[in-house]
Amino acid sequence: MTAILLTAAAAFALAPTADASPPTLSAEAVDLSVPGPFSVAYTDLTVSAAGRTYSARVWYPGTTAGTTAGADAPVATGAHPGLAFGHGFFQAITQYEGLLKHYASWGVITVVPKSQGGLFPSHSAFADDLNAGLTWLTAQNTASGSRFASRVDTSRYAVSGHSMGGGAALLAASRNPAVKSVTTLAAAETNPSAITASTALGMPVQYVGGSADSIAGVAGNQQKMYDAKSSGTQLRVITGGFHCGFEDSSGFGCDSGTISRAAQQKLTYAITTSWLLYTLGVDTSLYDQVWGSAAQNLAGVVYSAKP
Image (cartoon, rainbow, N blue to C red; front, side, top):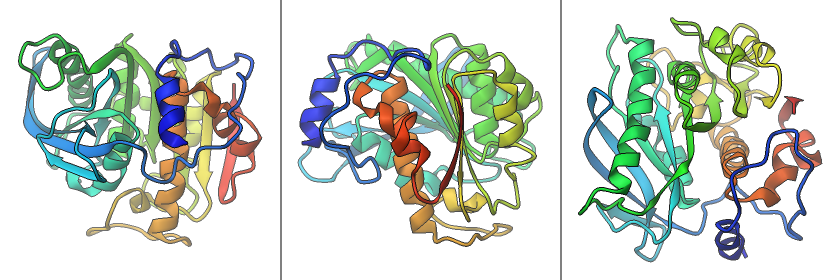
């Protein structure tokens, strides 16, 4: 059923505006917390675009049967949406492997810069790195011999990130008209200000946080960002969720919450995947899981929205 829904969804045009009337819903709700229909592949490479050069890993939907296609497998047939994802402060990109593999299983090609990983990162440069990842995907889509040739839907781009990377994603979106959707995890205030950047964002933006986050708490960060954006936005706060619960494991200086990491990640996968697929126009039947009663009444998540 999932594969059929996703295949049919490819025929949809770009996402409707956030305040559009809800489309006809599918008879059966799709569980976006579980892996999607695609096998998962990745490649490690150097991104060079828009004056930026950095090492990156790209997760993407592959063609090999099973749940993991592995390194450098062929890209699944069709044109897939693109995403640039930013890591948190002093965090390795491998900390987000579970989430990034999940997005790939649902057909999203995700560029993950390894840049700005030191003690003194530039938030502004990190935002430019995220945008360079999308520019690179656009170039790859028409590059002869690229595995991504004719495999990227350049009209469906999004940015995301955790903590510092979430703030940088908001900065990136404010600079790039190609970005059609944003979702962030425990987004932290940056320099320049991600709160200020939120005021000018015209695309749909989702802020996801944890009520027990002691590092980039909701009140001082995501709530202010959400308040700054006038419409087309939502704040989803996971009850008992913690800052490092969005990562696959906790390192030095991490916090803890009142729910398990597995429970927090399951909610995160469902919330953010439905958001991306709906707001990018991949599957408009997901309206209820994004803006409707299913979203508003999801157990363990406090919902606020300005459609």
